[in-house]
Image 1 (tube, one colour):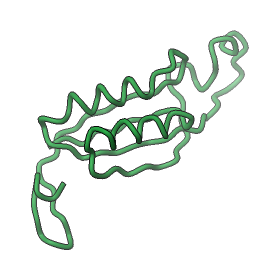
Image 2: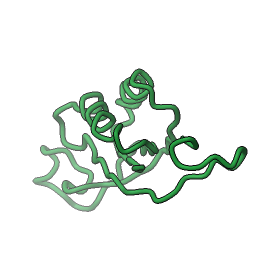
Image 3: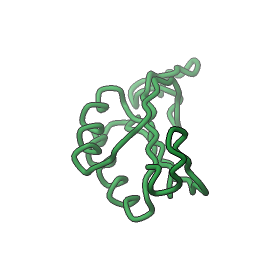
Length: 112
């Protein structure tokens, strides 16, 4: 199993959510976050006059998927979140050893 975490522009949330739901992702956690990346929270035009770091509003989406779904989920996120502008975001993929559904005690793929 994989935990896919993506940080995206808030304006892209609906497109990413819809793309994931359309491909059968059954759950996700969404958190409003702030951050900055390589450009310190500035647009390309602002970089020449950097005086400090600006934290930009972002959305973090976390999705647990079976190994076989990983590439398709990443492709869906990439195409739905891409604008071509600085700050489109990042995708992180981590291995998950075990998942347990608290209510039923189901484990691993059955718990997803």
